[in-house]
Length: 400
Picture 1 (cartoon, rainbow, N blue to C red):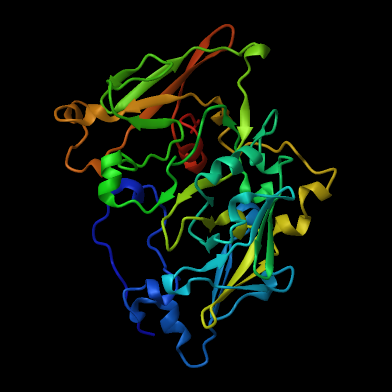
Picture 2: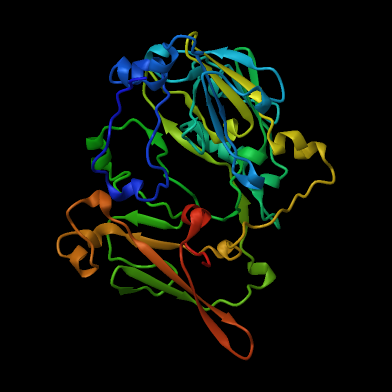
């Protein structure tokens, strides 16, 4: 089978330096390809005797479960029920896109799709559920819950999302749409802009997305010197050290933490938008999906995952509703906020921190946090550093 490929010989450090994978396999419809020879599945499906289907089984990698892509058919053993099909909409745009008729949260129909213009792109490369802005704020408000003593937010007693497609009604529970770790009040994760189709010039003018940071508690902004909010910040090379000497807070000063959905705003103009959802892992961790290249259409069926086989938490009164922290990140809920301002990277400023001015997109900032632990007879000065996927995505404090 002869397929044309594109090879990257040079990539920016951000965001590719933080990725573990070696490449991207594009399985979008052929109209997105440079030409038909660059469309892997188009070439594959034209082979004699080949099926026009491929199937995707996505897991979170827990309890030994592994994800799987089946080419030239699908794996029926991964299904708990028969497939139900929904036709691809706007196929000339090249995306695996479906119409969305209605969206409900806990049985209540939201206004967002009642004008009949909503669509959703099924995206195996997205870890979030994308919601068209500004409706994402309503979704976040309805789905967020105070964590209280919950350590694994996927176990929270939170609303059910229903996404109704032509022929299919998708139901999504907090087990797949909630972020695992509770977030401190006021802390947000990810880009506030989410997904947009702004031109590079517009992004540069607005200052958006020039620097991509994976740490939830590190912000970039212009104006003022580099400083730490709430801490005394001293610069050592390219590291900002912040020290806090807090002992256990009195009960009345306890910090509230919240369970929040894995969600991002989507701002797209026509013809993709403006009311475009991105159906990422919160949907795909629950449903096995099959993509029919010939029709085209998408089949959905409950995946035969451990979570689905156990059934929804609401149907199991004796189920654990508190959970536990992932191994090695028991200190992550000590989240502290540190603001890093980017104007120190102007002419002359970058050299003082050992940073290069050659390419703004390669600029990174790192925060080192220290915590004083009072044992009564002695105090330990413990260094906490960002490490592991949970720490990079959720907080700037993590014990390695």
